Length: 296
Image (cartoon, rainbow, N blue to C red; front, side):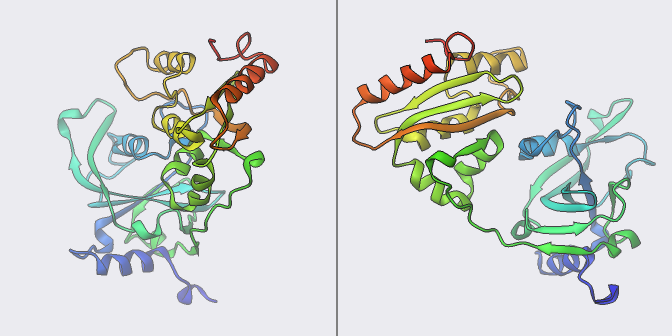
């Protein structure tokens, strides 16, 4: 298939834009590609950083020089995330309400960005070939943007439940488990069992053994972790406080390296005494009171 017959990003943006109310033209759109920088705390370091809050904060801050970023970029910013050398996957979009001049510093400008539902049905599905990763942003009407080929528009397949012995989730995946319809089979399974679970900090190997018993079930307990990263546990809460240096409830980054797995599951009618005994056994066997994150 030659280039003129290929589906390009410009085709997609123009088609979806024409159906938007009010219509959005290519000249109103700016496309941006973010890539991960694992060792830069001010950047997006991994998939766990692809939250609305973090992408918004990272995107709204731009260099003060118009040579590095346009003085008046488009009204809609379409955000892609690097997914390989040139592959770039759609994250979402923001409405640009202009620079907030009162926030300008000597080096940076800050824009008033609001989440947009533009291209919402293609989020995480649309993948394009970003021809020059060094050029990380451009107007959608530019010649280079018009040449960008669509590689795929993927289906949002269900994530199959691997069985209780196969559960291993990053913190980023745990948050998806709680909210994403693709994990419906996982939620159904985890909502039915009590159990003993393990949280491992992959950055240092420290572990925490916890339990979910009674009516809470594994899903309920893990939903609490997805919200704040500590679920009320003493040692994990301490890590959260240390990461921001306060107890004000500010957003923390302490859970980004956490891995969640199951050590043992119990049926819903299993007595709490049996669950408690299993929890104590695993704490002793894994020495998490001495070398890990358990405090009792």
